[in-house]
Image (cartoon, rainbow over all chains, first blue to last red; front, side, top):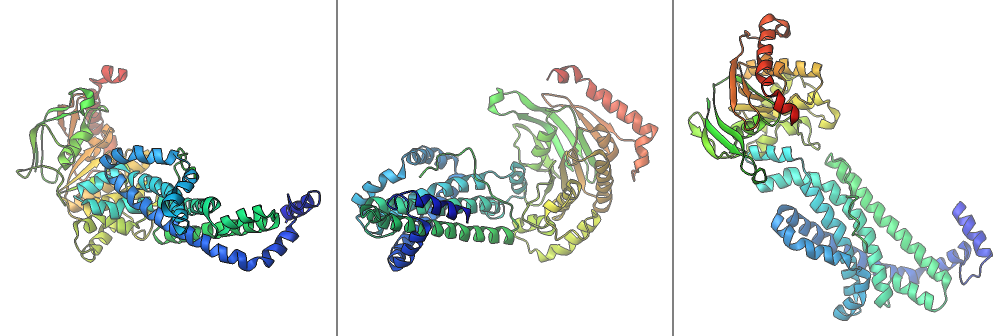
Length: 247
Length: 257
């Protein structure tokens, strides 16, 4: 509430072209409702497809790497290098390769959400108690038993945390990709509004994007809570030493 | 019967080929409690894992009733670690039945036995608790039940009560003896606490520091069943002093390391 009041007061002292007040923005939001909704579906589709694809590939690759030192040695340098590249900078390239449709946006969203899942899957599956591994070995457990009964339950909280980060990253990815290429989607709508000096519409779209991001995050938070409760698991952690997750 | 015959074990390559264990020979009889004590780094834990089959040896043999140990075998040894190593997401009952699941045997056949053992170690009423809700001593009791559930031929215990406070440790010693009297299991027990070793064991194996060899095997003259009072008896004090003397031979070098 205080933030809204501050915003309103600030808007009175500035040109509406720079900072429109909350009331004009809200009016715009209602008036452009159907336009925003149409574009929202486009962006949401890109996010969901990219997020699901990116996380699946991240989890699968992470599982493979966690189980094989050799694979880790081979793939790690490539993955580290690819992460150093700012993914947003790849957007024009993907347009060249994949055209102007959903392709490049989904790809960017997937690429960005891939990494937190990869990293957290590896950490979660690997960082099990060495004594627990000895216990399983002493029982003559097969690798799939160690995976299902030890590594997966231990890693699940980490993977769930990765999913929460991943969905936010996918949102960033999809919007950035739309900035570069699209004529549809909320990112494209922001660019159009900018071109028309329609600052009110820009604010309206940003608000919609924010709300959508929060809802997606909360949705995964709910899934996480449910899963942790159902399987009696503790909280997962993101490895704080990892900083190469920049989109 | 477990026969350990002229066993040698090398450290990993980084150590440049020194022996962790050198020419260790020892015979453990059926139903006996044998403790391994010695200065830290003497290879007592290594020897335990060699018996379990989790560690390989370079020379010598370890025989289980005449059959050589060549890697871990299902259902032969029950391991108990210093930490309880329970899976946090499983209840006590589910933790205890883990070996049964791994063996692919029907869980239902073992539930009654699990309940009996849970009662024997004094965890009645806690079968449906998650490990996080239990104290360290209670977790370790669950770990003992997990090691016993599949009727292993030998219980291998690696400083199982080392992380517990003195009083709890004493309780756990009594509990272990009660379990042993009931089940008659052969127990190999690694500890750095010579009084614990003396109190529990039929024989105490004193090892030297690197390379680990058997310095002496001391028979414990105390009668069974053991009672807390025996800890203050003359025989016990004399035994403790003897063990102490055998360990102190290593002190000058141990103090430097």
